[in-house]
Image 1 (cartoon, rainbow, N blue to C red):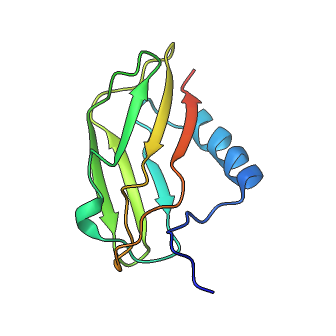
Image 2: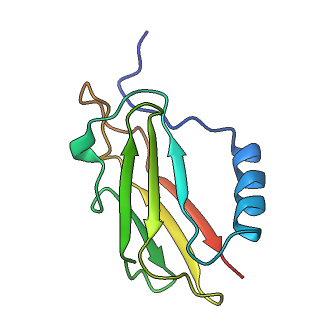
Length: 114
């Protein structure tokens, strides 16, 4: 039976390991890449449905790009991350597949640059 929801391709342990490795060797302008298992509705890929917050829940300015060939979203900060703050990448259930199905559950990944 087909799913009524959109899923993010992930293996949680592999993702956690890769995130730790990638952040450790990047600048404070780390670009998140989230791969989806189905084409997305480009209108749902925006700064309202995907965003980064700091530990005080303030939203950071970001640039969001959608790679239609690879079904990958890139979230690039427009201001450097602080070495002392903790951040959260938020992907809401309002992100939709091309067929109009919403992401099943929100995705929240906490990270720190320092």
